[in-house]
Length: 186
Image (tube, rainbow, N blue to C red; front, side):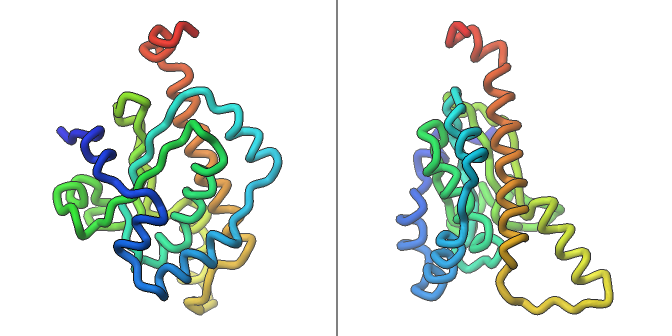
């Protein structure tokens, strides 16, 4: 069984993760996506209504294109509410964790582990969202050939929505948890 509290304590905030593990070019790519991510008033309102603390541990790689396109979204979401605490761990720096968080038999990233305020695991999400898989399937299984260029704005919006849906799902799970409702008297 994984000590999630210990793993979370060993994680790094967004900027520290990029400083430690990213090259200048990798930090630039993540920064470009970060600058393009925005939350609507409705999305910000949803996040401001969060009641339960959520701890998120993101297994990532600064070199990874999927991470560069999704981790800045996670950071923007975490910055939008004091109820979300987000840390990053490098996939190659923790073989045990990387082994535990394999996706489809491979060491895929990013993978987010959603944890309660007391570090009980609530869910895992990654390596790509449904919207991104739909986009890739349309590109790779149809007549069009992938360009390898950055995701268009519509894709970024759809992937942001996918992530927000998962954040909301976990928040509702925490909000409706009999254990946490008893603990908080609500």
